[in-house]
Every structure is written in structure tokens, then in C-alpha cells.
Amino acid sequence: MIAFDDWLKIDIRIGEIKKAEKIEGADKLLKLEVDLGNESKQLVAGIAEYYKPEEIIGKKIPVLVNLEPKKLRGVESQGMILCAVDGDVPVLLEPEKDVPNGTKVR
Image (tube, rainbow, N blue to C red):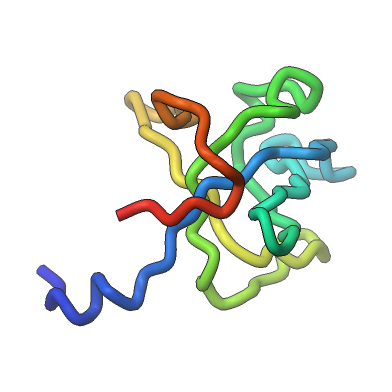
């Protein structure tokens, strides 16, 4: 359980995947460039076994934008995409309707 005040610290926004590429030497990781309206962020996501880079470009996804940056395989990730997980399979989440990049998720 977390306190409501902790929940208020979480900043989730809708971002559009503009670029996606495999990370050399990493079978599970993709490097993404995500447009969040007023800024772009580079993210590393463990979805390469399930999604090809070319099939996710243009998708709008929820992104945890205020997560502390972390390097994975030498590539800095500046946030985290949010997925549903069916067993071990990540499933990208998309807004039901088109919303502007950077729209806050509550």
C-alpha cells in the first residue's frame, strides 16, 4: 500500500513513439524516442522479443516520466513505458481515443 500523497508524485503522460531500434547485444531491449508534447525522452524497454521496432512507431503509450534515469546496456533510459503483462508477455497500452502527446494520465 502507498499513501495517496505518494501516488500524487507519480507523473504518467501519453507519449508517441517516434523512433525505435534494437540495442546491439541485447535480445530483449529496444531504445525508444518518445514525444511527450513539450519534450522528448529516450527510453529503454524490455519488449524486443514481442515487438519489432517498425511496428510500434507511431503508437501512443503511457510513460512514467519522472522516474530517475538509469543506464541499461550503456543506454540511458529517462522513464518507463507502462504495459499490461499477460503471463510473461508485455502488451502495449494505448488510449481509447487520440489525445495530444503529453496528456496526463490520472
